[in-house]
Image (cartoon, rainbow, N blue to C red):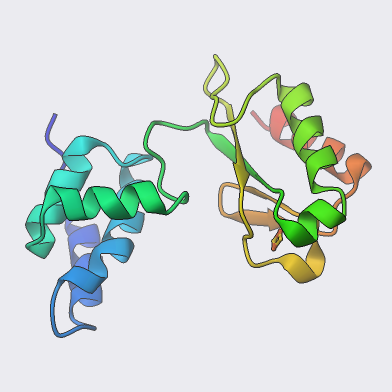
Length: 160
Ligand code: FES
């Protein structure tokens, strides 16, 4: 099914395009806006982004597959990203990753059957000074320990 940006999102992309002498550098912003609207980056989304920016679908695919922040399939309502890069790893990032895996019974990039949760092990999210950290959708939770992770996961389970 074809993907079309909302009028508001088209304006946002136009604003991004206007920041540069050519359209191509707006590709990351356009993909982010597309993901906000669609939830993930489908083939149809990539085609539409390519069309708007006058670039090829292959160029868009290269960006989507390089940056893990773009989802290549639908994720859960609460997408949980656990950082296991150096600073987080040294402060228990893998313990937290395993805790989330076990609590939600999910493997990396898996979505729960009820589509509420998905899990992703990620590289540094720029929050090293407050490691270890996880992100739930776009919200960061930092300076974590097992108890805090338990509370966070329960709060999302309860609010659903
Ligand atoms: S290493 Fe985890 S946020 Fe940087």
